[in-house]
Image (cartoon, rainbow, N blue to C red; front, side, top):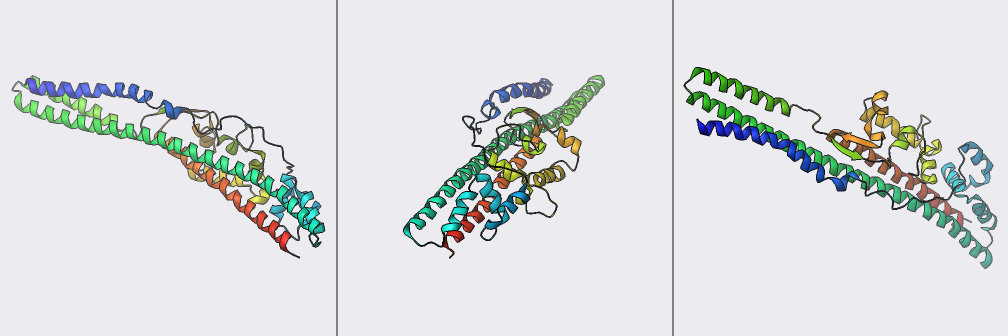
Length: 319
């Protein structure tokens, strides 16, 4: 009898240890709460020659259409290098040494500016990648806590049920049998209900520098993005779609459909677009997916850069 009661007592004591484990868990995640992915300092990016009247820009540089695509012309305009290209066109048929050197000089000016924005693209993609990994680490951490908790509760329920059955067979007093049976049933039911938590536990996760919020709000309110990248996100000529949406708007539509089941109210109130707060493992996974999507979006801009470089080389080599 004493052994049975001791077993029941130990199962209850083990269950009470969960709260202490929660306290210990909070102490072990400080390295993940604060982002280690953000740039070491804010950088004042050089303002570019950006205009969203793309048709006017293309029409104003009609002489470039013979050598460059519309997208390349817009990039050249944003970088402030259309005058260098015009000078190259004027002298490209001149085979003198001075003209050849001048063309190389002009091309070098353009390449330097392309290198700068390419570095910005790489830096932004790297931050998205790092932040996505940070969120994944936290999601795994929370999921492991949920799994351990559920395993513990299931094991405690099994022990309680076994102890109750054994006690019922040993105790001869009907009143005591009923009391042990009822008590064991209540404890078992409580342990069972404790495992029935679809979302699992929540954990504090902060991200004041939110790389998703500006995209969702379609407004650059923070220094999260260099001007060139934001221009590529928001200029509709770079989106290559039939619906007239920008890269940013297409991304937002995908999030709304795939991550929020077309529920705009849920999306607008989602924690992923805030400064952070109490996250479930599922919410963290959702945020990680969106960050990884944005990393891919940033890297696709290199396609436009590549086409511009190819057009530029053709201009230099074509007679």
